[in-house]
Image (cartoon, rainbow, N blue to C red; front, side):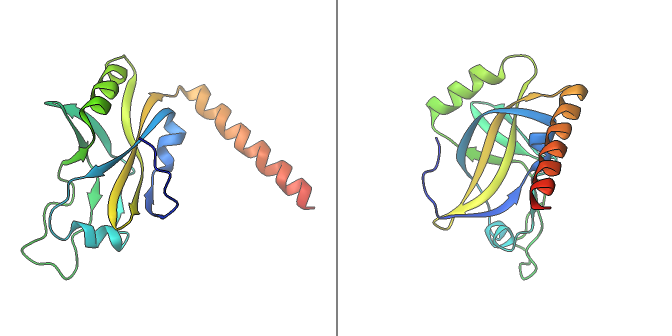
Length: 153
């Protein structure tokens, strides 16, 4: 499900995802948070660089997403890297399950953002890039940069 809402406040991006993977299909999903985690996310103390998602017991779980403990929180702070449940419809989960059951396909989070004061996570179905694919994408970006530089001068 894609968001048509322009009221997106991006909190964290995952540039490593587009570098390491071919991103096929993207989904916007909610995330189950506890206590002061939303306040930490609002302060942009979240890291999704090394995180990934897995399907367990018919649910999609986000693993290794680091949300720093809230400074003003005390006993209500939870483990920074605990597993968090992503909220999707059953039909979407079934569709994702079909796609990630293939070899070499995984789920990676690409961004965390707010939509109308609700935390959303964008996950993408991703296929791993080979080393030569990574080099090719770096060469394309470098060529585009040079062209823009030449146009400016």
